[in-house]
Length: 103
Image 1 (cartoon, rainbow, N blue to C red):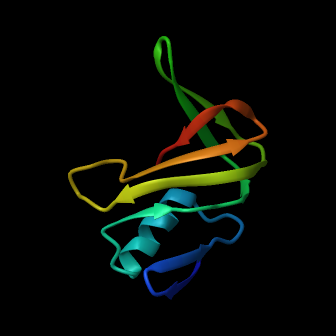
Image 2 (image 1 turned 120 degrees about the horizontal axis):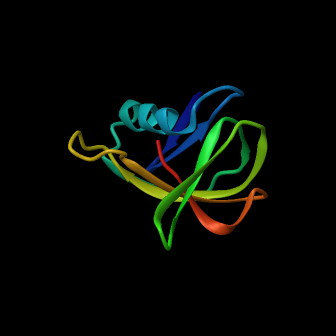
């Protein structure tokens, strides 16, 4: 993971094989971020779950293969009492619904 801070903004670049949510948490801790927003993210995901709130409650679908991540945005707060600390939304080619990826 590479990070660079410019003013109040931090850019995070992940390498192949790095986990999304733990990497965001590590970047937040490194730059002493207590709360913030993921403005934009693109790339590829592998070994992940996509979930949505449907008529029968929260439903998750696992994906082992690689999939293109078209858009990622969300918000987060580092707080020991709240898990997961990051709530992100994404658009991908595996679903036409608004989805949530949580760690």
